[in-house]
Image 1 (tube, rainbow, N blue to C red):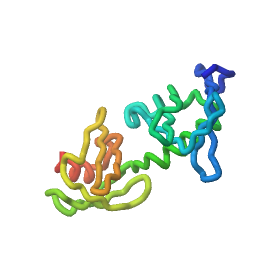
Image 2 (cartoon, helix red, strand yellow):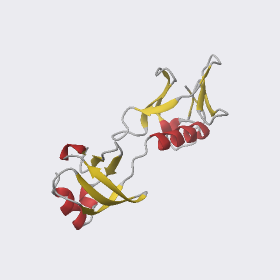
Image 3 (spheres, rainbow, N blue to C red):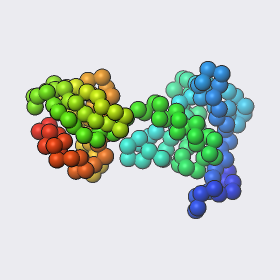
Amino acid sequence: MSPTQSTLPGIPTQQPDWQLRRNAFGQLELIDGAGAHHAPVVPVRAFPLSAPEESVSMVGPQGDELAFIDLLITLPAPIQTLVREELREREFMPTLLRIESVSSFATPSTWRVVTDQGDTTLVLRGEEDIRRLEGPALLIADNHGLHYRIPDRWALDQHSRTLLDRFL
């Protein structure tokens, strides 16, 4: 990538030696420096929770890395938008805002919760499905493999913290 005129204070925008666009099927297509077309490609974050803006690979249909992005924010706006849209679809992870109730303090148990995507229920198979992340953050996996993020467990209301503490 070569630096171009900066659009962000102190961070130069990088012009990659590849192009990215959506093809007729709505898939991301990467055109490399040699003019070869690769589709579909998917962005994959190396550290989706601890460093979501850094180290993103553009992976081709055979699972090979076609391009590497050091920092998303350094990409030109149109490419950045395409990558972020694809990541948003690929990495759906609602933020858990409140725990309304749990069916039982033994697992498996059904939880009624409020997320940033609306109200839902999840089934917690076991306490091992609650992962501690950096600081006060938690990641809860339900029986379908969907992950719910709690950025700061201490920011939850008292009722939610009381219910959650029974499983930690």
